[in-house]
Image 1: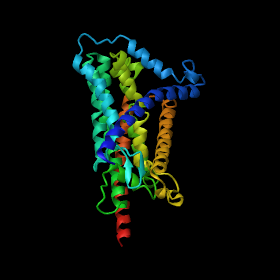
Image 2: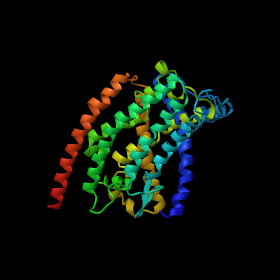
Image 3: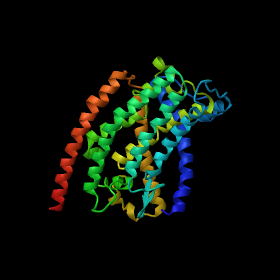
Length: 348
């Protein structure tokens, strides 16, 4: 894609992300209601579809309160950092392929490293929010976020390395195997889910933990920390944290889809001759499959939230350090050996 096309793509992508975040809250409340045999939002607009707009309006007219002893600058910047880091992750995710081009904001040659870097930085918004509020419950929530990120970043990174090894083995010599588009294209023969199932399970759990969703929501455990890191937030600043929470219903599933489920790739593309279709048809095909997979993973996130109880803190740490990290190391060694055998046989 040309540079001006990439710049123009930013605005519709941001608009869609904000809309999906708003209606992610609606979808989650309806799914929760179905699981708990109640109704859910159904009063504001047909089927309650205008409820997210009503929630935004309510937050806009609420009083913005900042604690007297808070660090006012960081208290203001923390939700902005959280929203910004959540959104910029979408910049390297390819949504579709048409001809020899990709529907992506920026196809950088180290895209997967970019994703890992932004994921690591995203915890700063929550941690700074807890510290800047100058309250014990907020601070504990922020500290828990840091500990949780450190615990699950390692197995997540090892799962990604296993995918990079597979991509390097399956792509032609000289390909940018750290590019996110290369990771998707390498899955044309078979998704990484089927070649690297243990890596998928580890990656899925770690992404869920990094998103701080139940059962990993210890950063805002209301029974222990009142509201956790956002206890001292109100009005639009609180609303921005809610936007991040529901962006975590879209962006992490999109990353899982891209890395392990073939991204925009659909079934029987060779038999259907998708490569010979027009650009518009190819974009609709790829975008349709990408969204279908992403929303399916998002539904599993909601399913888990309303099924499993929250972990205790020691259980959270044990799972990350004593279970997932050793499994991720073992999986990496097995994948590396398998990839080496595959390359040797292919070369021979």
